[in-house]
Length: 385
Image (cartoon, rainbow, N blue to C red):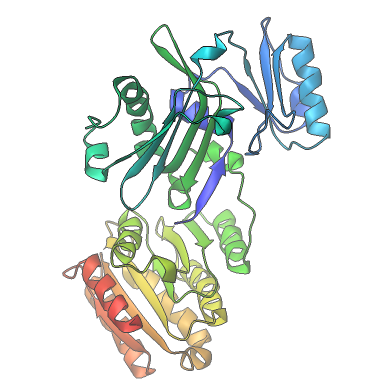
């Protein structure tokens, strides 16, 4: 599971459902066009940097004019994005720390009855692991009462955004309302495209790191359909060609559940009824990544749910067109193709794909929706063992 950091502005905006009063700027032009009201402000470098307070990247209790000057100085030095938000005066002794991280064992909750820049030097730390089931049902009986209130507020945020790590340092209880003074969030990259579009500009680790990602990003820009691709490990064994609609996440989850998480090379989706040519271009990018992998055995998982309107015969034709282009090198790979898909024209689509793979001596297992994603995950595991 790849993680990406989103800006504090994006995190707080998602947390409050639009009630957040901070503003975000990423250029001096945006800053010049900004109209701040009277009041006191906090100015921060909003680039996911740790220990910003100790590095002088947080300016507190500023007037409107001072906030503009501080923001301009940070933009001209090290920061690519600036957060300007209201300043709240509170008792420093009320500062607390909390972080929540999704792990295989459950949600690890770390708390400290002290918070702020010196939290790492304190010894009042408590760690509790809440099972996934208890977290889902809001059964926080293992947590102190004062912590439960904060966790309940963050639980919805985690479930709605796909956050895998949340750190609030500090937070302060002001008259029964929780103020998240500093809010750091990491999102499961699988969920980024499910968040509002504006959030994408606030992803801190969104640089293209693989030529396949660049090719898919270009395709997505040019098409009315939707395409995404994130590479995890270019030399891993399992490459996934997944349709959208939620089934793509289920496929990844099933592969992880059988212990194959370290073998997954990528995650991505195609959705929105792409054309044959568009599907071929998407498949081209993935196949090129597969061919460059140094894994001794490789699996290509072509999977998705039961489509409502996407003609899978059209998308499968795109897949076989791409396969045909790369056929000579694909046949030299120690490769097995696993298919699980359904939807309009599934019978002819699955039949023709299976015939194509058999005709060209590419090892395969082709299934319709009668087989579960867990069944396919077990097949992949058996093949790679």
